[in-house]
Image 1 (cartoon, rainbow over the protein chains, first blue to last red):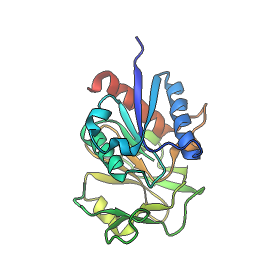
Image 2: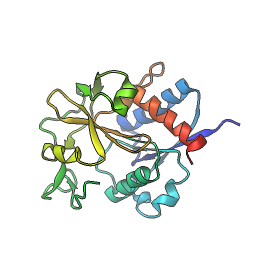
Image 3: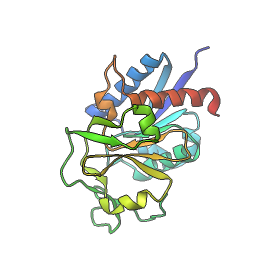
Image 4: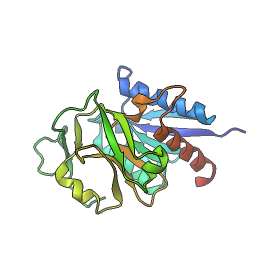
Length: 93
Length: 132
């Protein structure tokens, strides 16, 4: 069975943001090139303020999106800390 | 990570005294910039080059007053612009933890994905398979 890679994007998605759209597209480009199946989910920063570990545990990697200020800087920081401490591949752009 | 408890961002807390992230001397929105990659780093392994050009969409960056501090912790400066200002950092002792001031996603093309993003996804795939 093909494994689907779960990517969590820390950020407050705006459909009118060129950077946000480009983030989704760039992940798809790289996944195609690698021939892997991916599932991308945007995680609004206020939802990451509490129980961050429980929420993020299922993700194989985390991406901190462009677009500060975040709705919740605390949520973003908790999520970045989880990536660091739980050894998740992480990119912040 | 540096033990700076009251670190603040000029965009959300302009009056704070410890502005770790401050407004850039000039906006980088829409600018392309040459970036020197420090040899012997993960970033250099990924790019396989020592100089790259990347596109920005940013008005804020690391306050240069704190640049020397960064080098003292696990977070390392691994990419700088021609003026020596921080553009890429990575965390030592972690399988893949990279942050950039520029947006690699803006230069990704369907037939030419960005090397940083491809390397990141490959790590994610490997983590999902064996990392847990």
